[in-house]
Image (cartoon, rainbow, N blue to C red; front, side):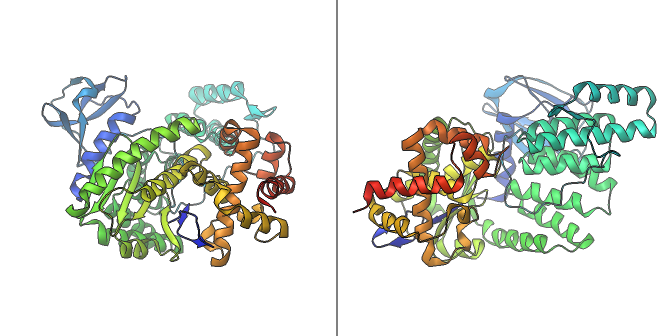
Length: 505
């Protein structure tokens, strides 16, 4: 998800707030994306016009917003979204986690523990899965047996059955369905450590960060010797830009279990925190944008407006509506290098948060607008494919969306394809940041050529279908056989023929 400033033979590849306000921003997102939570006797209940509810303490109101508190944190909800409020005379307990936004999302670049193992059936077969589908009759039967007996064996079968069903759905590219199975199991097997970890793992991977906190904060207290709960909590806090809490939780995990990935995550978060204190923030329906200094405020407002326009364009083009709030960070150039530790040719980055250096800019430029659309396309792809999109497909689509064509570099690409130079598409599935610098420009060119070929030959609808099929079938060789009737090598040859025919001499 890298945007490069590499230029080859005159060809441009165009790759080039205050902490206390975080909770006020979160309240806005919360009101837009809330899932229902059951009312509690010790809290006010806020009924939204979309039918959902929020349980929190209403601490003050004005004509535009309702200010609430939950778990020691304050957030605001636009009054226009609220149907009514049922007041309680009792305060929300300070240790009560916040309500949970529902986000159809993709994993961010954060450390995660291994997913908890599923106990194998004695005969090696899963009784919860029958004829390639979940056996709902079996699950209903073990539900009833547990409810009526609560015996140890009933408990074991219930836990095993729902783990197997959730794992089956995850492998089929339906993690949201898997989350629902874990939720159901935990309603019966309350505070089960393995089921809680399994659900927490998926919630963080799907970026349901506040719901993950709601689940994991009490679980971490109940299981003080488990590093995994603190690891997941740190990743949830990091995803929501709460760097102090993320670092604190990751350090707790590290104290319990040494993990180099956690150390790297802490170092990165500390680098971000060192510059975040002087940052201001703007927010909109789909974005949280942070920037440094009042002198960048006008540019930041233009960036936010541009992102909203681009969001609508991508929504229509890719037939997808992301519900995850997208975090955008505008950096001075040196801060960008210090935080991302990327090679000099990297001009912007999307690691789950869009990071763009803007030193020297005071107004929106066509180049910056293209970079923003490119990086935002990566955010869409992340969510559509659950993070399972090969890099070349991702980069090719992002270039296509920003308006780049192969016309300006066609002759060079034709020569490269004709001579077999450069890595194959199967060799470009991993991030380009690891490529030798002299291959980067060609990697971007080949990526663009492939997506342009698919669009010109099969239509934009086929690109949408491929994206939506990737979660359940991330093996491109298999996917291309199913969708395009082409093997991976045959696809590469077809792209080569397309480019050579079009631009070869």
